[in-house]
Length: 218
Ligand SMILES: [Zn+2]
Image (tube, rainbow, N blue to C red; front, side, top):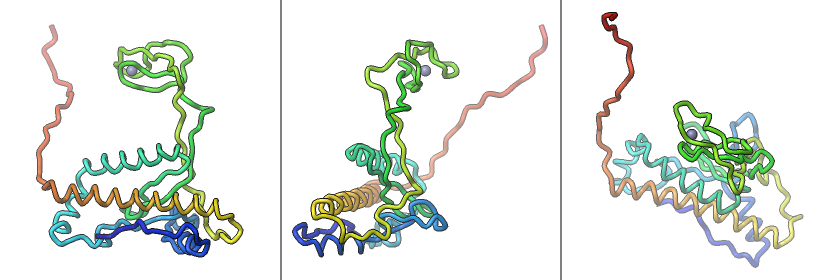
């Protein structure tokens, strides 16, 4: 099975620069934008999976449950990096995980939250919820909730001359990219564990729907 994390000698400037400069990169947005960042290819057929896992792997990609788990892993990782660093899928069919720069926007932080539906707004005092059919109240939050932003058009360390970086900055960046690689490992492991423990089966769902009918006028 493919592993992305690799050890780097943090005492060696040469090893660290070699790691950063040699790391796989991918577009942060699309190819014409020409901006790239550290990335990993996570296409199923590139993961060196055992054949019994491969048999299920493609079907598994159609199940929405796995994406809930991936999103949670991505969210927790970004949260641990104060959203300054985020990872996300990119590429046609999402075959790449890419490291993005971003942050938290406190200026436009939401100040109120509905106690019933959870909607966030900028109200400064308790107000009836503005969601349709919600009877809740928008209560002012003790601590505002900042908006998350990312800079998908911006490159990360593209054409960077690492020889100008001091050793501490290099160490920090290597550590960040290693953590990103570990996140990619976690996501692949989560995917493999789904393949090992679940089968994909067809299920029918019935959907109730509101329609107009005629009734004799009274
Ligand atoms: Zn509400």
